[in-house]
Image 1 (cartoon, rainbow, N blue to C red):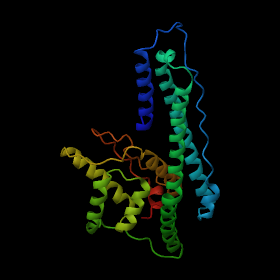
Image 2 (image 1 turned 135 degrees about the vertical axis):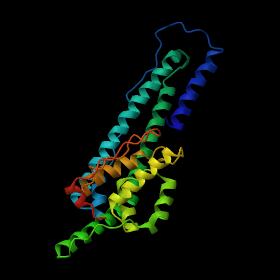
Image 3 (image 1 turned 90 degrees about the vertical axis):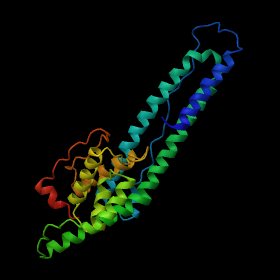
Length: 267
């Protein structure tokens, strides 16, 4: 799992092995570590800060509910892993004189959980929110133009001059989130669907040629899941099925956008 948790578990096992080399044999086979439930706190609500930053109530509710859901999933995974690691120490329970070893392990999980929530909160408030506001402003501008009587814009031709921008992004991450695709479409003066298909085709070509490409860094899964969950609701692009498995040996085909939802993607 995490390096910090792995180091803590290794230290505890090493301590038991070292003590076992000169400690007397246990007199009781029923010795066990006093394992308590891991009490991880719930994250603080971001609603007030989101409203202060200019996020409307609908978007704020979507962001908070997604953040709470992912935080609860993290909490469940950590609790399961904590119990598993405690059970792995039970065979050497008679070499520990008190519950300090379990407390040490528990503190490690609490520390990492707190740091993860702080990192996620900072990302949402300092990174995601400004990008979301910008994307929504672009959407509202186009919708206002349509309501003012402007003719519907013809389908855009693929912008060849934007290829270097897409290639540079692809080198760092071959699997952009939906919000990142919206941003690339705006930056490249192209449609969302064109960006989506370009990345899909490029990944397929790299696989056929036996070339490797970069995926999201370990631990960045929250960013992708969070952004896609929020953007699906606010920008109506949930019908685009991404290659979520990220399997290096296969690519899941993307489902075309329906007519109604395609019209909602302005970029």
